Image (tube, rainbow, N blue to C red; front, side):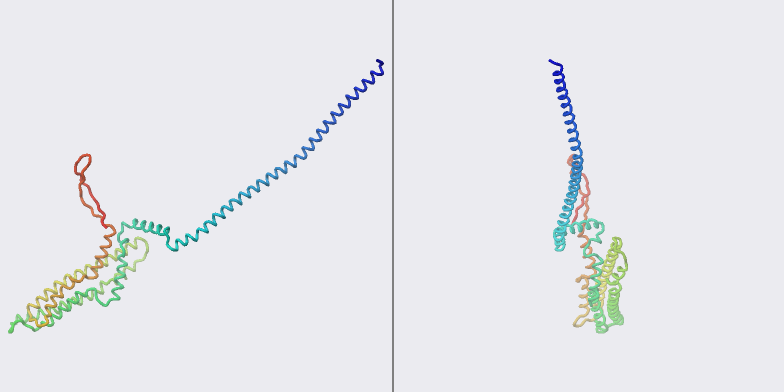
Length: 329
């Protein structure tokens, strides 16, 4: 083969190889340029994605806040809707309020069991006030049975003066008759004046006016008022009981004495005085009745009765002494 042809072949092969290398370099440059354009475009995409995610998270928070707000609004609306029904129940005294009030009453009762003066109904101060009002509205004295008996004794003494059983009385008999009549009038008048004085000096109204001077609304002040009121009720009842007992027997024996030393006509004033002398015994004095009723109501709160008893022990089979307590209402 001539050298010229060999040179041509090598030249063609060289050109082919150069073109291949050039095409490879072009392809590489194109790939790099495409990758660069993709990188530039990916940055905004990422930014947009981050913005989108941020906006979605913000929207989510807003949504959560909106949801919580809606829940709070719904709870508030439910409470407001339930409030009228609760007020209606409270207004008509429904079972909820009754149960609460009952619990409060029982709690107050248990807290005050150590002071029966504060638990008794009516309290001593309330009874004192009621009786004071009754005294002002009544024209009859609280000692009216004693006063009627005393008036009968005065009449028997005054009507028997100078009336002798004997047709020709002695000086001693005249003196005995005069003494009997004078004593009847005197004792009857003393009972009338004494009961009138006691009815005003030991009245419920006077005791109540003294107790009202005590200020304070705490438990100690209330207890003080109730105990002083009880003392006023007890003091009045004791005085009334003593007056009734003394007047019964004094009027009775004086009426008998007048009847023994004077001649009685028709009607027999001494017989009337003897019968009416027991009037305070037949009719209960209201002052004594008030104190007895107050004591009765206070005992009904709780009345512990202790007694010594025996119990058969199951193990030793022996009688064991014990202290028993029974609550009586």
